[in-house]
Image (cartoon, rainbow, N blue to C red; front, side, top):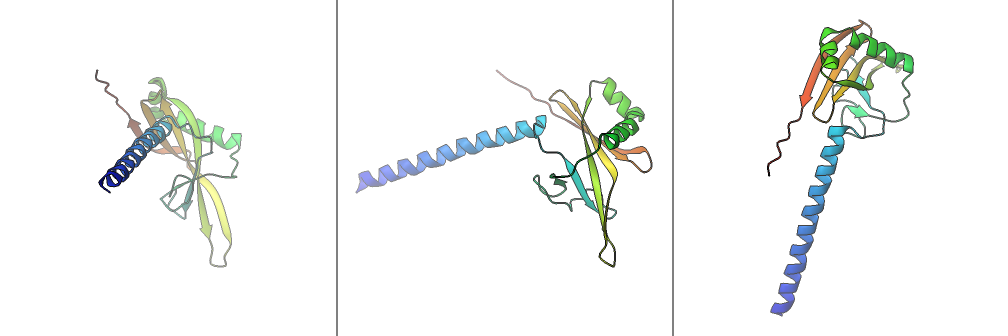
Length: 161
């Protein structure tokens, strides 16, 4: 009877250890994919009313991010990129080695009193990447033709022997 208990304990311990290793690998793969943005799905920000992308949209990445069958015209992307490139801070980022990697429109949805729904992409996020260490998110107000916010994220890895 004691031998059977040891066997069950060893089997349980082995299972827990394998699950821990696999979850660690999954977390590392997810973190590396998020850092390098290796997704193939288009990024669409969904927002409601005056709250662009404000955590109210639903999608693959949780609240605020979506994806699906929305096609963004090249003219819209070019317009957003041109507005971003006219900003001096964005010009500095581009000079520092950042590259424009994506344009993500923020789609505002308004439901009127009579139930009429209108959608318009008045704001967009331009994603800039610098190798694997830096990422910048530039918020562009398309209607006003200006950059309203820049968020810069950097990743530092110190490898020790």
